Image (cartoon, rainbow, N blue to C red; front, side, top):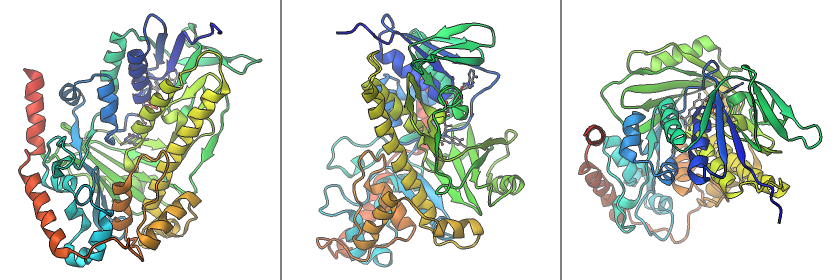
Length: 498
Ligand SMILES: Cc1cc2nc3c(=O)[nH]c(=O)nc-3n(C[C@H](O)[C@H](O)[C@H](O)COP(=O)(O)OP(=O)(O)OC[C@H]3O[C@@H](n4cnc5c(N)ncnc54)[C@H](O)[C@@H]3O)c2cc1C
């Protein structure tokens, strides 16, 4: 047996990715065995956006033993039950992508089959009326899900909308308390071993040199180690996801606290609205080939519901991912590993997922390529699944009011997504995807919300409008009996202050 092992980890970057890594690694690896250091540069700063999440983040926080009320107070967080999509299928449309199932648990067929066979929208109203998290989101209610799976109040999950910079600070305190050593400074040079191609050390502007066995590149879009030093290469997906710019602009809180994110399709992209406790996060993601920056800013300002609180933060990106997320002794996590626009709030999830896989495949020190290959295989799949789900929102539009939307309707799509759409269009089947983070209700919401209707239904589907209709009223009743979202947040704030 060999004695080689990874004794020293260096994380480059202190954005959300860097501090999530530092927190998780310091929690899971024993400080007396592995030294964990993090270098970040306040002068360079972080990307400064990233506020909406999916329910998996709760497992990340729980795995660190983080108290939810404390975390929410420190990050000004709100609860999130859904995303509302406005104007995506057609102008004037609105549908919700909920974190939970449609219909009743344990039904024989997926609910959309029964809903469609029973007359669909005409006989039963929107499918959104048959989802508890949507009823809660609309009524601005919140309670934690019930634990009994037979209970209708167990049919949903929830996530958070939070201040990402505050989350990074929170995790920094967590990681430093567990022995992570933080160095302030700018990395100016990366030394690579000519023989093995492994990174040996990095040099800071101050002259300090830091050696490590494993380097985690969390340096953001620039990919300081993975790209600038190791020239890993990038898979460009912009022909499928043409948006390449964003403007972020926070605005004053309006007094409303909707427990959901809104994504409104605009002329050449879309705008987000993310309500936090102390302000509202807004942004416009757009395609520079179809819209100039000035028009993009005007459209964003038109969306604001409160006074702008800062100067606009302008960002550029390219949809895609690194060819190898783990290359030699460097693992790229966060924006350095790739980027998929925040339409379904998935970037922080990809960080979490990469950390989980890195811990599962933690290098033994022998640098067996099988470890990196498996990590890359799984992460590639996760990226591709999310990519497909995002493309669906653009491809399945009936809008033809601008050149951008006409382009999206006509563009080629990956075979994997084409097959998935075909299955649904043919017979309402939501084909399983290995390693896909989005499950049936997510696909149901977007397919139906954007007017893809199955030609045939599951033969087991029932025509039972009279039996189904009362469910909508029952879900509204359950939601209405729950406390208001604002009330729950203020109870947390009092509990943490006590
Ligand atoms: C427009 C937009 C909206 C987004 N919205 C969401 C969302 O709603 N939900 C979601 O999950 N995600 C979202 N994201 C993604 C999310 O913001 C990022 O995934 C997350 O913030 C992680 O960023 P990061 O830590 O990888 O990079 P960054 O925040 O860029 O951090 C990079 C770090 O590296 C350091 N660094 C860089 N170079 C050097 C150097 N030479 N020396 C020393 N240090 C260096 C920097 O100082 C910084 O600390 C969004 C992203 C964008 C662009």
